[in-house]
Length: 123
Length: 143
Image 1 (cartoon, rainbow over the protein chains, first blue to last red):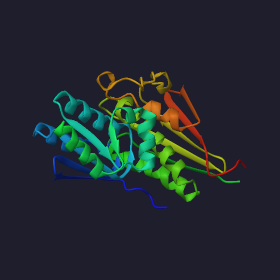
Image 2: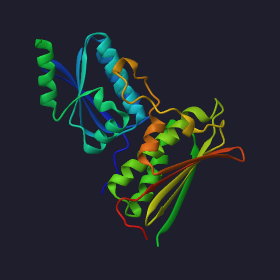
Image 3: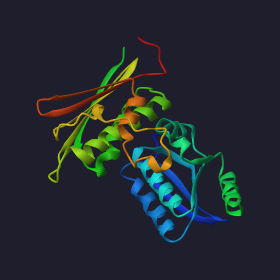
Image 4: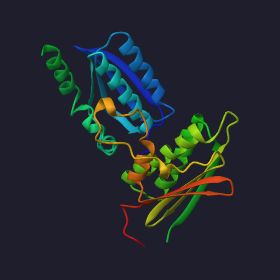
């Protein structure tokens, strides 16, 4: 077993109709503000479809959940969407304990999340 | 029978959060605690330490003391601070079924602690908040 990463890397890229945000590492009270900065900048810059790729997100605390919930609320207010993709089982469990699996659209992979974004835009 | 204790005292600031949770993770890993137990204890310790860091002290700051005990059957972590008295067990459980518009931002940390640990005890003793959290190891039978 390896000790988990203690930093959070945030990578942004445009993929089709969505802005993709890749979170890698550990999202806690010390590191979540870095993700919050990216999300705020994207939303204020006009992004309305954000897909968060969680495939390399090893850890999330309530501070990380708070950042994602805040972004979801902001996007919903302006008619946008935030979807999550590729949650590891332990991250999924944290979402379930918090009841967040009811609030977020969660997809098994990034391509499914982007497809759902395309469908939403087309509807 | 295993009975291994490790402790650490650090300034209660976000810059030290990684070192605080890292001490517990390292201690658990060194004593063969499973990855699942380690993840969930780590999260509970993170939430409890973050509460101390954010709310226990005023601008002058203070310290947080962690003590972690691993036995063959359980893990117990006690978090002590000398900040303002605060019993996290009195925090109301958020409505987990509320719709998005009614969901407050926050209030989940204590709920996570309660959900992940088997027993959580709080006492205010000699001017200190002491929060002790115990989790039964899922990787071992008792003894």
